Length: 332
Image (cartoon, rainbow, N blue to C red; front, top):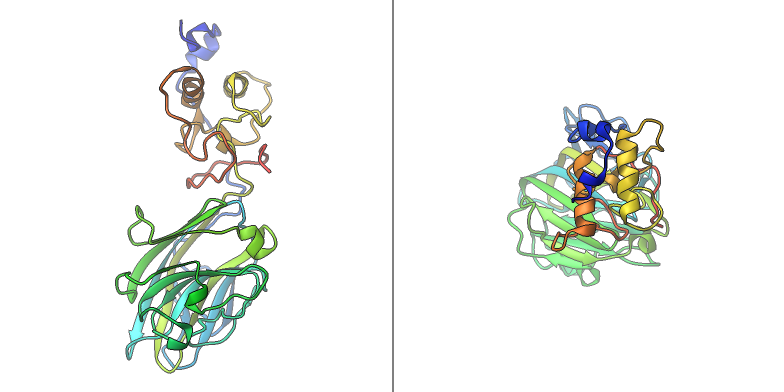
């Protein structure tokens, strides 16, 4: 007899397949489908709102601009962020733009031109979208991506210090989509193709930033040659402290007690509510219902069943974009 067949509550059997509603997202997530509304953002120096876009730099020489969240965001445990940018090249085009995570200030911005607005910035990780070959920075060519971070000292735009470089990217001018995924250990950079990362680097952001939160945003610069660096959309999803998938009762383990806790929370009035819906989403489909209990029980007791979706039954970031909340976990 199967495990579910041994559960004799008629009310439970009648409710099989029914989903449960979950509260709205409480993590530090935001979504700007365009920039007609820029509430929550800080525009620095040359950066302006241009209709429903953000223009980091105007099309003229020796400019620098930046955009950051007004509030610091949870970073160290993991996050995903996706943005669409448009580089409008003029006279060849230079110098480029960056995605920045930093603990300097909500208006941090350094030199224009080749330094890309961040060279010398302390406690920062930067993804360069570099459009000009600056020989003094050892750039591999005039069209490359790179990731830069240093621990205990100011960041450097010199490519010999980069954690990772991709000098074989397609033309970075025009409109492109970039996504970054960080799971607490590895940073992956995607460009247009969201299945295969262009760069993968191992980095401990808590050490780089010297804390778990940081301002996130962008810089753009021009030098003796110029171009417009524009943002069309941006979304950000934080993983907070991470989860252990299947640990529904938040006791640090994943076992039959979690399945019982989940079924009680779903179907028994007056039961203790779940404090982490992300952990209870055992099949990682963005909802919490009877199918999650079935998936958990299968993983526990059916030989050959695959493990639970990432991060599995160990602490890690849930990088799935959903609306599930997690007020407490057993993870550090």
